[in-house]
Image (cartoon, rainbow, N blue to C red; front, side, top):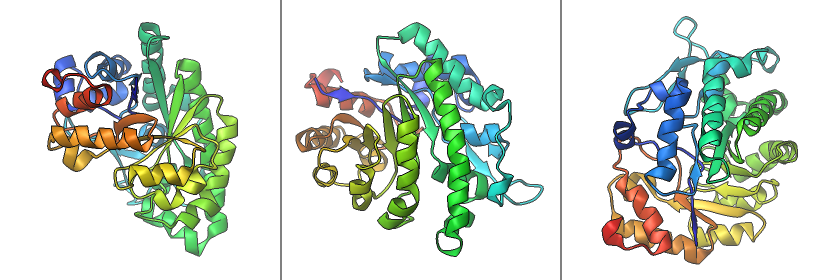
Length: 325
């Protein structure tokens, strides 16, 4: 039976309404986070539960200035209103607080995993999530500030990656101890911003080290166009790669040549958001025929979409009667 399970967020407002667990409260309330996350299994019928919905828990725990969003909007990191700058400007400023894992944004995910382990351990896959050093640098240094270093100061960029990777490792091990069966590692060196050679030269060596240091299956996630770097991603040592609908599924399978499993890649902004159920069927069929191992939305789903197209993915993958999906 084809596997269906998203390594990223499946939270929608209608699922929030069904559970009474709403953004932004779920980002800092473990019971609500666990309850909302469980709808992936209980309501949608997916083979995995992933309780970390946003992209900012580590940055918030490090002390970055936050906009926690609202019911229909994800949280985000902002420059400090007092200084108009991000948390760090130099790699030597990076310091992991001794109580990092006890700070509320970090602890909430850990406690949610413990709750889910008690309720669902051994029944359904529990997916932790951590952010890699490239994405952490966007949050803690600012995207433009960090990307300029690719050309202006590659040595400084590498020092940043080395230091931030320790946050990834620390939080990953804590989530495994809390009950995660596997991890999503999101690290957004996307073709929409950087060349494939940038991934090869800067991030691939870091990912290979992370793959050796993380003692569970790891699913790398990168949004956007990634086909040109998939041959490098296949050398990372990770178990799987979660990829975007901007990349053709057949071409992606060919690019990785069996060296890493693929997860994806049903389109979010058009197919799912607009509820195009027949298009869901077609995209799922195409991905399965191409050889994609786990069927999933391409990324965190739009919060304001109806959840019915998410159930349709399961129906399409498993040949369930469409009238009941």
